[in-house]
Every structure is written in structure tokens, then in C-alpha cells.
Length: 296
Image (tube, rainbow, N blue to C red; front, side, top):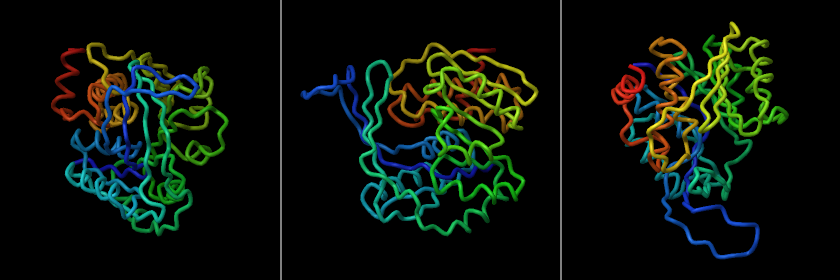
């Protein structure tokens, strides 16, 4: 079984569905519904990867509180090895406002400690035994970059909606071998992708929501992949992390790049049909079946 170490990004979310985002004025707003669930990018990747058959270890910070206990319980139920450290500030919590068009406003209502005092030696020791290492852009995760480099493992990073200027991302961008990002904050993304490849990146993938994705390889091949139609959008939260997991599924099986991107698109599409970070129906068998249905 392929082993993946995912570091950083665990929270407990309150998801509130609205017909449309409220205007900027004092008012009373009625929701279409709400639910509470596991959140954040590390959890999203871990859940999708586990459902696709990976042996997943996830490190994250949680509090010794109700929300931290609920996160631990859910991850254990999913068969994920949760390597948690306690955050004295408590469990990070978000309120996500989701509109009917799939837009999201994420409100951080409780923050994780930015510079936690952690002994990461136990994580450093795990790196050589894992096939993939994924560092999310959580501040403490950058401390593991030297250990990943010493191990000779490829470093996979998702820099999300990087705007091309934020210095916070620099360590992750410089160290990563394979980079995933979105064009939400960078409409002119191609020059930046070309720059990354010129700096030695093996692969750069940029997602565009309902407009598909763009990939650039180390040999300067551009590949455009549209979304896969036919899936009813219920909640777009976690779609990017699901996309990442679907791509890694194909990559781990040494499928051609175009097939990996199509599998990623299907995994993202399955994610948005549910209110969770990963579709409850997701499995490697379902993903392969959906691929055959759409692409033969």
C-alpha cells in the first residue's frame, strides 16, 4: 500500500449555506441550512487519499477540547493515522459561508498557534518510510523542509491562491518539487508557472474551479483539462484537496499525466456533490469506474 505523510492543516468547521452572500450592511440573514464537520486542507487531502486506498499519516494541531476530540474520532474512523500535537490555544475553527453558486467566504473564528513549540523529530523519522511527503502551507510545516530534502523524497506542496507576492509562501515554493495552486488570486498564472519550471520544478498544476486546470511539465508541455460534466454541485468546500488526491492516485499508479489530471477532475467533481471534504462514496474502484464512463 502506498504511504503518504501529510503535514499541517486540521480544523473544525461550521458550514452555513446561503442563497447569496449578504450585502455590506447591518441585516438579518436566513440560511438554507448548516452543518459542522472536519475542515482544513490537510484533513481534506488525507480523507480523499485514504478513501482512494493510500496508507495515510496526518499531522496536525488540535486542542484538548470537544472539537479536537471530534476531529480525532473522525480521523480514526476513517483509518487515518493521526499524529497530533496539542495546541494550547485550542482547536482551530472556521465558519464558512457558502452561496448557491459555490462561492465561499471563510471566517477564521479561532486560530492555531502560529509558531508552536513542537518537537518534530518523530515526524522527521517517519519521512524515509513514506512514498509521498505533502507539506501544507502551515507555518510549522516549513521546519520539515530540510529533513525532506535530506531524505531524497519528492516534496509536494499546495500553495492554494498564492498571489505571486506573499513572502509567507517562499520557503514552500523554493523547496517543492511538485506544486499545485489555484488561479483565484493570479489571473496571469502562466508566466509564474513557467518561472517555477525554469527553477527546476518537475510539475506545476493550476486549478481554475469550474474552468478546469492547467499543467506544465518539466519539459515545457502544457496540458489543459476541462472539468468533467454531469455532477450536481452541492458544496465546493474541499474540491481542490480532492483534486490533489485524485492526481496523486493516478501518479502513484504511473498513469500518463493527462489521465492523472482527468482522475483529479473526477475526484474534485465527486467532492462537490457532498457536504464533506471527501465524497462518502469515493473509492479507487468508483474513481476508475467513473473514468471509464467518461473517457473509455
